Image (cartoon, rainbow, N blue to C red):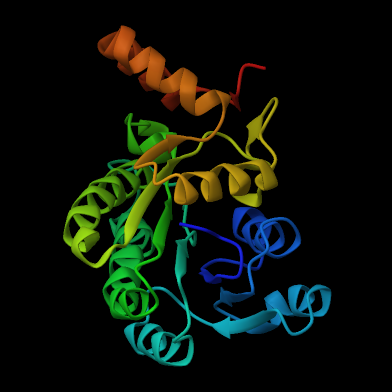
Length: 253
């Protein structure tokens, strides 16, 4: 699909990769308008000031179906949906006091995109099909035990991407899944070493939508993780298991 002159909606747009998507869409890709969705629209007000008339902050909690329905009604001109909002609680699956953290990660990282796609599928159909971009993680293709419920939730979102792609193909909507490594965001603040710039991830994501790429490794770490998985899956599993006792985590660069 052609990004230029399209209208997009980005969840989790107030910072990190979501904020980068808004900027790249409006400053580089030629999008006509972007709805910057955040739980508190005031957190995205700086983007409205940066792109007056072209960026509109929208109240949207991806775990709140009423807010999702309201957004789908208000943002009826959307042709590109970017499911970027995510949650990482930094709690183990078994070692945590209870499963509330894992439930919360599944609600945001899996059920959130599912609810968004269900609500916006008719909107996308009316606007020519368009595309959905699901921002996932290298944790979607390999289990990272030290990240607790985050990895299972992103793996579920990866399967969602595949299933939604099949269901929406008939209306001309493409679904792209982004496999993302370590990025300079608040979520990855605990990771040491070289990390990718959010703007580069956004640019890669838009290329995936334009070229109708089903699944894209957006950066060096994602490529290296997939290569290691194919070369020696059990060896990679053992190495990642050792991160459970690590005092610090590094990208290795």
